[in-house]
Structures are given as C-alpha cells and as structure tokens.
Length: 590
Image (cartoon, rainbow, N blue to C red):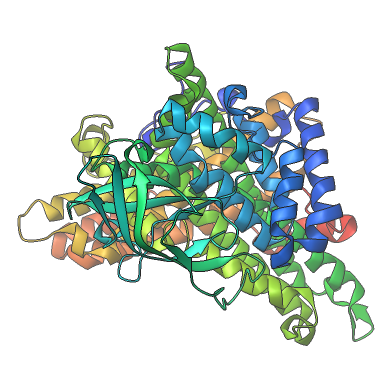
C-alpha cells in the first residue's frame, strides 16, 4: 500500500492527494454494467414487491441468482467476490428500491454472514456460507435485548456448558430481530459464566427456540422483525464464533462495514427521492405556474442535491481507502476475511461518518419530498408518507447516530493514546499559531481558497478538540460525561471530512475529466463550504463556551474567527443554477 494513502482518522492532520482519490467518475465499464443489472432488478422486482413481507424470501432468492448475496464472499465459500467499488454501487442501486427489502438483504449479507466469514471456523464457513450465498440459508443477528440496546455487553442471555463439555445451553430473550420470521440460522450473543460475552451460530430449528409475533413498526413494515426466545437451546461447542469472552469484537467489527453500507444505501435512496420531488414539482401547478418555478421550492431541490453530492463524494472516497487497505492486507499474506476485517476496522471513523451523514441526509431529502407534495405527501394513499416512515429507522440501527458520534471521538482518542495517530503535535502547532500574525496569502493553484479553507477547518477542529482534551486533563472533568461537547466536535469532524471530499472530487474532475466538470460542481462546492463553515463556527463556539472562560475563551474564539475565512458567496444564485439543471433533467444532476 502506498505510504501516501492515509490511515484511519489521519485526515485530521494530513492532506489527501486528490490524484490518488477514487471518485464516482472513475467507475469503469464493467462496474457500470453491474450497476445496470442491479438497477433493472430494483425497477422490475423490488419496487413492485419489496414492501410485501411475504415476498422477502423470494426476492432474496432472486438477488442470490444475480450474485448479490455473495458479492463480498470468496468463491471457496460459494461467493462471487467483487471489488469494494462494485459492492458500493450495488448498495447504492439497492438504495433506490424499497427499504423493507433493503433491510432484509442487508441484515442477511452483513450482520448475518460476516460474523461467520470473519470469525467462524473453517468448518462453520464451509457449512453455512455457500447456502447464504445461494439463498438457501437465510440469516438473522440476535444481539439486542429488552435491557441492552446500545450497551450490548449488558446482555442477560446465558450460555451454560453441559457436563460432557459438548454443548452450550442458551437461555434468554432477544428483541428487534430482523429476518427472524424466516431465518434458518441465528447469530446469537450470550454470556458464558455470566460475564464472558460470546458469539454463537444457532440453527433456527433447534428445540427450545420460539418466536414472538411480527412487530407493528412505524416503518419498514415489509421486513420481518420479531422477538426470539431461547429456552435451554443446545448448541454444539464447535458453533462458537471467535474466542470465548471476545464477542464484543464480533459485534463491533461487523458493524463497521454495516455502517458504511447503510450510509451508501441511504445515498441511493436520496437519488430516487430527489427525482420524485423534481417530477412532482414540475407537474404541480399553483398560481398558473409549476411549483418548481418558485425560489422556495428551488432552494429545497438544490440543497438536497448539494448534500447528496457531498455524501456521494465521501462514500467513494472511503470505498477507495478500504479497497487499498484490503489489497495491502492480502499482499501481506492475509486471507480475504481478515483483509476485509482489517480494512473496515482501520476506517471505522470514516464508516461512522458515512452512516451518520447518509441517514441524516436522506431524512432531510424525504422531509422536503413531503413538503413539496403538500397534502398529498401526508396522505397514506401516496408513496412519500410510507417512505418518510421507512427512512426514520436509519438513524437508529447499526448504532444510533448519537452513539456513532461518540464513537468517532472515542476511536480517535484511543488511536492517539496508542500512538497510532499523532494529534498532539499538530494540535500544539495550532495553539502556537494563535499567537502569530494571520496570513491571507493564496497560491495560484486551482481552488486555492478551498484548499486553504480545508487547512483552516482542520486547524479549527484540532484547536477545539485539543482544548477539550486539556480540559479533561485537569482531573476534575471526564469528557465521557460531557456528551454535548463530544457531539459538537464530532459534527465539526463530519463537516470537515465531507467538505474535503467534495474538493478532492472536483480537483480530480478538473485534471482527469474536464469535459464532465461544470459550473454546477463548483456551485455545489461553494455553497457547501460556506454552510459548513457556519456550522463549524457554531459547533466550535458552543464547545469552547461549554468549558473555557475569561482570556482563554477569548483567545480561542479569536482562533475560530481566524480559521473561518472562506469568502461569502451568492448562495441564492448558485442554488438556482443547480435547481435549473435538476428541473430540466428531472433527476439528480451530478
């Protein structure tokens, strides 16, 4: 792997070379053919049947026939492995379909299959993965319990070893289990000896397993969600996943790639939703004009497109990092499972950013879809109301967005303490810079202002984060209990990463695909930078004022001002330009 490829979290202290960054425009012909195949499946089958609970198994079988269930699994285990970019666009295209089926498929291919692929013995892999790839074995993941949601390690389900040391007997209750109604195998987490949190593979037809009724959910009603009860269920010792007492490694690691895929599915969904919004705005007449001709509606359409563009740029950037890390791990002698695990774990921070951004951007887009449809949007007779309910779950599962924001900070601090990420030196340099005269010099290179602004945004984040850590070091405070500050810093990090991802994409477009680069790309970048700067300033000020005072606060607030020098832009006109293209094309325009 090139030393120029950044490690996880290093975007906080180092620049990324745009020439090495992957952008959607880099997708090749073969990958685009995969896209068309998945899109045809979505349009011809998923959009028609994906909301129907009784169709989930059949659709999973059809997805298996297309190779969609095993596209991340080696041929040895019945898969048809594709690169990270191809798997990303598969998730994106599935996102254009129905959320109920996406939930069924994602639970099966992600948290259902990956624990076995990553942590199962060779015998478990050979026994279960081929059937999971061809659709004959459907999987579910049993982690959450009535009293343990985000705090997974507080699970009460017990596993007791039999006297002959041949079986574990599992007793307990799991809730909110996706695919429970038709799963053939469960990934189950239980406590051995009351304290050793451990993963097991459990056949669903084992004596002692019973199911609750289908949950009456707010949305994704076509997916199966039931409680699963285990009453003295015997599981062979050979069905343990990984090491005894190390179940947390399974639970946490499979969620990294799950978060990435969820954010990517959300991105695909936003493209479908913005198309629906534009088409309705063009058709709906008010005061003798289509409502798409009014500035208030154009703002909504353009803002949705800008946020999607930021998300799309970030998704493929992270795909590139994970693909490079996976290849490097394989080249060093790791098998495919360990290589994928290493890649997802390395970029856990970036995956959390994708999950948060994707789930919140799709919520913004679907909310504006309802607003543009007006009363029709609020009626259950039309699709927007159902889609609105379906999207809401994205901010909850795969770890709530609040948990993911805290994870971003915790993972960065942990890597810093381990010496894997040098934040101390750069943060100290920023502190010293506060006492020097500011420089407004710009180079002659394209997008010099944006390049300098990213460096300034990074300094702002390091200044605030460094001050927060110093605040904790006084021995009187613990950042773990200061969640509001953690949220402020996490949001600053997210805005920094999305803004830089846009810039990297446009820099590469200008150099490699100049014929595809338009004023609209630059309009999207300028609006996003201007708005991101405002959010960075607000979050930075809020965080600092939460723990600093007097001269210390005054100096750091001057630092916030110093590092927020992106020049004002005519956001109204830039958004109108983007809206005009959206309205003319009746679809996402980037």
